[in-house]
Length: 487
Ligand code: GLN
Image 1 (cartoon, rainbow, N blue to C red):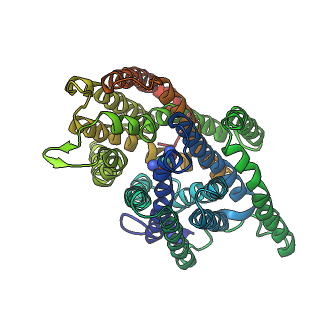
Image 2 (image 1 turned 45 degrees about the horizontal axis):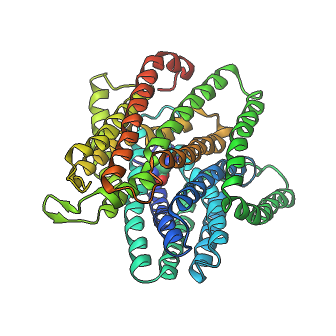
Image 3 (image 1 turned 90 degrees about the horizontal axis):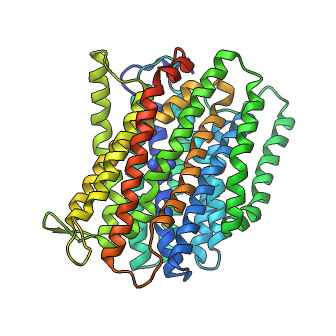
């Protein structure tokens, strides 16, 4: 491992391998994600509000299972095998959906939920292991990794829905599966360059004993599929699940904390503060897949500076495109500030993330001032809001991944990364509820009335985001103390 961590230059070469595996995995993931709501309304004939809640539930489950995936990686499988097993589950899920998307919809989704749970947190943790604890190049590494995520998201998000809508849903889901195979093959062929990173933590045990733990994990995963299928398909079970999973994980963390020193535990508490704030962040940010997509469908002109564009396409793709373009720029800005010794610390960066979020939602709100009499408003102003929100995301999301790997003791890396994504699960869940709260259920509502209802909601979100940002910046010295030597 030391050889890897002593790399020269800006990035270790192993980062590129993980970059490509994750890029293709996100193609599969965002390809599916981009099809779900539309598919449920169009093919499963769900009502729009039901589809929205259902969509929120699947996303909440996906991210909630990252905690399970992270935990099993730490305790039994190691990152590599977890990732591999997750990839296989995702492929099976896509194949099931390709065979008969209508008939097997929730079965396919259940496989995807488990699969992402084993894959997503562990590949992120592996990126962290490429760096020594005090290596200042780590944030830049996560930033590059984040661009890979968004290249996959951009391609998958656009291509799959296009094929599904205009050609065949089976082929669209099948394509997601094929791309996932590419992801896994990339990982298989490159993992020999990873030295001992990500091997099972149980290597000291006898082979047969270790194998029996491993196989128990695999079998347990398969047995969980029917359960997950039932839970995902019922909003009521989703609620129960969300009420319990968070408290259980916190209790479990408290139980684990007894094994660590006071210093290490202080860092874990700092990590929890970041995690808590990120729930709010995602609850607002993830309006993108819910209320903002309805807003795009109802209230946007399709003219962008004279070019004809599909508003929902813009809603899906603008953010990823801006991440790809501006993540490197922001990286340079941080370095530039660092050289001048005025780089904000991580807590303040998180705070800035919320300030950008506030400004973005204020911009979504202000689209109402550009609306015509029919309630159609400017696609340019809408896109500007996505431009701003992207900077908020970049101040929080890649940095959040990086800080989790810095604040967690070695033995809890996977689990803490899982907790970071569990916050996304709650964010998604709350996002659905917020979006439902903003929408007008009256079927005769005009576009103008809908515009006012949604933008009223966005104005409120802007205010709350502003408050959260200010609070974070004010408490930053306190959190910094908990973080001790971690920057
Ligand atoms: N867009 C990022 C990804 O897919 C972050 C998602 C999240 O944490 N909610 O990895």
